[in-house]
Length: 313
Image (cartoon, rainbow, N blue to C red; front, side, top):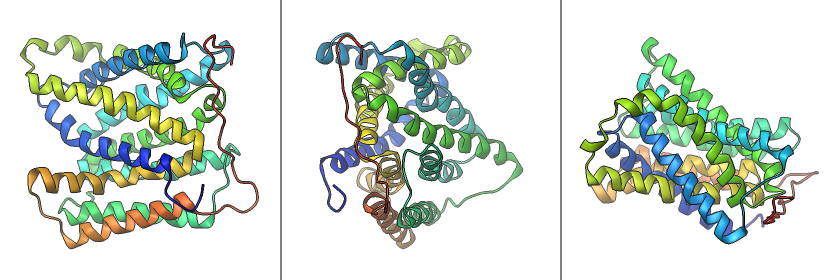
C-alpha cells in the first residue's frame, strides 16, 4: 500500500493523538513527581502490562539467545537512555527548543536506515522530511514560543538532539527483531530491559520522592501515560515499523505538535494563529510526501512477523 490511507496509517494517527495528549497529561503529573521517577514508574508499569499481554495471547514471552543484545539495544535507545537524555535535557532548555530537536527524529531514522541498507530514501521523502521540520518550527513560532539560542540552553539542546538520534536508532535496530517476533513480544522484552536501566538511574530521585503526597489526579495521569501512551502506543509504533518501514513510520512523529495544539484549542480554549495553521498544513504535507513517496529500485518489503510461544523464532 503506497497511495492510500490504510489500517496502519489510521493506527499511527491514533498513536499521534495519544502522544499529543500526553504532553498535557505528563506536564500535569510532573508538578508532583520528578521526571525520572515518573518515567521509571511509567515504563515499569507498561513493561509488566506488556509481558502479561504477550504471555496471555502468545505464550511465554521469550526470544532467542542471539537476539538478546539487539533487544537490549532497542530497549535502551527507545526507553532507557532516551528518557534520561530527554528528561534531563528538558531541564536545561525550553519546550520549544526540545520540540524542534525531536522533530529531527525522521532525519536520523532515514540516515540510519539508509546507512544500514534497510531502506532507500527517495528524493521526495527528503523533501517531505524537510517540510515537516519547517512546519514544526512554524507551528512553534506561531504560538509565540520561538526557538531560542543561548549558552544556557545549548547543553539541553545537545542532550535532546542525542535523544532524537537514539529514537531514530531504535526504529532501525528493531526491524530485524520484527522479522522474527511480533511487535508485542519484542516490545515487552525490550521495554523491560530499558525500564531496568531507567530504574537504576532514577534511584536517588525515587528515594527522595514523597509518594504519599501524590494526588489521585496525578496517579490517573501516570496510569494514562503508562497504559495507552507507553504500552499500547509503543506496540502499534513498532508494529508499523515492521509493516511500512522505519522512515515512513517515524515521520508521523512530527504530527504531534500540531495535534497537541488542536487538543489545547478544544480543552483549554486557546486560539489558533495563522502561522500555526500554516505550520500544521506544511507538516501534514511533509508527512504525506514521506509516507507515500515511491522509491525506485529496491523497495523495502514489509517484514513478516512470526511469533512462537517457545521463543525459538
